[in-house]
Image (cartoon, rainbow, N blue to C red):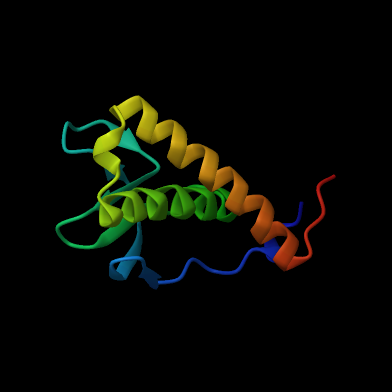
Length: 109
């Protein structure tokens, strides 16, 4: 798949609870110090994404983190244990990637 098909990551996104700022940074770390591909900060309404990832993966991370934001904004994130939340965010990010590929006219090889 050609990386040129993927648009740049937006810097502002309309989330379910309001505007979300998106920044691509060199390294993303959780509060415990472990490195990760992306992180949603509810207090700042911001998402940070590791800019060293391929652009296609950055989009998947964005969709994953936007799912965290939507679940938190809706107040339903508390219904799941942390592993359940991550699984749900991964599943929805995968579904949104397929939808986005269709919108961009990208066909799987």
